[in-house]
Picture 1 (tube, helix red, strand yellow):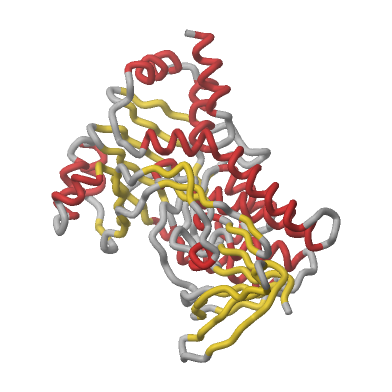
Picture 2: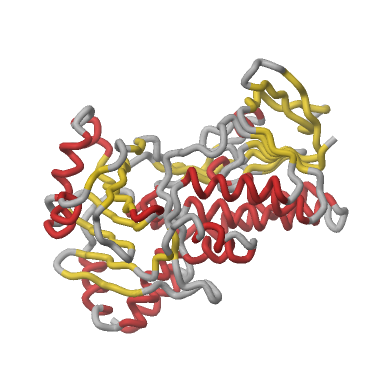
Length: 393
């Protein structure tokens, strides 16, 4: 019998399993994918996420994959840009944007190195119950071999369509529709050192440096425009880029290396994330549009906080069910402001008059610009920043 079974071995599951194994727990980590493998994702990891990687001893491994540190951001808001570096997280001032097939391999291998029993290409068919308590999962390998494994706690870290969440009937709350879609691809030969964001008419366009001298270029635009342009992704993408002539020229002089990836399945929601013998982490428990690029950082935060909660509960320091409930409660508190801002930005509407006034007011004030970029990165509380700017205005 395991102490913990973690279902899902990507940005929430592998770090959680690794951290628990480092504390001496017996952990089984399963995923239906074969590693390494790619997955649709924003890739961008803000400074708090990079700080988690550093704390876990993995940030240098990510850099060693030929993934460059990203030292700052250009945010183009209408006729001008604000440029700077978000307020650091501790001593970490850079962001990073690794390919998921590379990042997830680093995390998966780190879990195995910590002593986690890892099984990829392994399909979870449901949970196992002992009365009203979850105490295991039923599995099937790619070869069709079925088995049942038991644990004191089952963690669903298996994404927004979580089989664990579905099996325990985890209810949703604070849901939001998919206002916009998000599509991206990779180019070589496009010079870029910093992250670039362009707020344009009914779209947000972005560029991030990633592994092997490639850049990721994405566009988020209203979901109804995806429906009307289905089958014309290339044409739509470059039509949007025309709103940023300099970027269009750079991209046109480069070479597209891969097909477009993306999705329209971007609604926001929270789920009840704990119950007798089970708990949810990452997108399984809390999902939002990728426009603020918070998904990986949120998954890392969940892994770190849940490892602490599980250690407290499994060791007997506190009641296990109480520990899991507190983990879920504090998560909701931590992400509430960012979730609201993400839902608003996902509408890809032009900046309001108030926001335009704000950008004009902070233009030329590097400290205020870095504070604003910190609200995007998650190193500055959104409400505190805007309250301070209102007092200045």
